[in-house]
Length: 281
Ligand code: ADP
Ligand code: MG
Image (cartoon, rainbow, N blue to C red; front, side, top):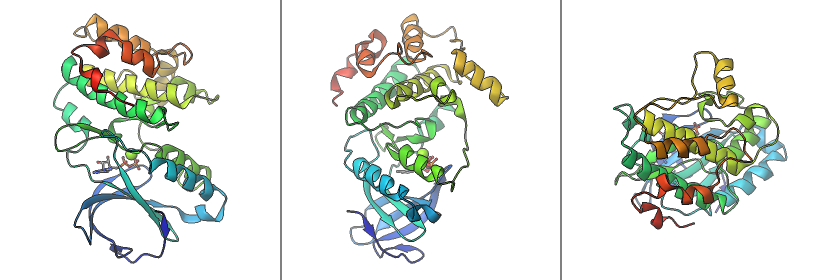
């Protein structure tokens, strides 16, 4: 599946025709592209790898990629193939039409029922990956996309490990964006468990969906870290008590006592309405 061949400018290995820029992330650029032979629309994430292949790190990256390309779930952006030139890695992915989930929230917070629908889809994707030993570690709004039917698609699953490898090489150490979704145990830089860290980030996402604002925020970065570390947040008064209780289990600063995916599947707020029954890992 992984081919390593040279590339020309806009025709990717003669196979994909690169189109317009879809988005610019902290570590890559994402383009719309078309499979020349089949006409299929795809998204291509381009990462500048610079010197990475000169080190043993490339072996780790390849291992991660082979795990990622085996993931197959209706709420995960499918990775079709990975191509590489001397200086770039190209992740050819399923093209997701509906934009980012959080573009919708700028128009106002969601009802608890709508938030539950997205949260159940998020958990089904996260649980599926966890049961295969793949952790996201970077769950945040820009990685939650919507398809043409308004269903959630999580992007970048497993990619964080690849990103970490590239950062370790000193190439792309620009940690852009906000740490608002990062679990407290990451801030203390002790060891951490990928599954528990993902559950925390899911908690922050659920809070934002239902509150319309971040649980932990501050103009001052150190002050924000402190709030995360202490688990200092306040629920708005319109939240149901079931939701507040659930959030307190997700946003538990102690990773040992924090709710797990199994616990989430048993939670009364999560199960309301029965939609959880569709969840399969
Ligand atoms: P990074 O991981 O480097 O931060 P992103 O994954 O956030 O980069 O990609 C940047 C933007 O590109 C996203 O916010 C999204 O708008 C767009 N994008 C990413 N993947 C896709 C995709 N598969 N289909 C459509 N748009 C995408
Ligand atoms: Mg991303």
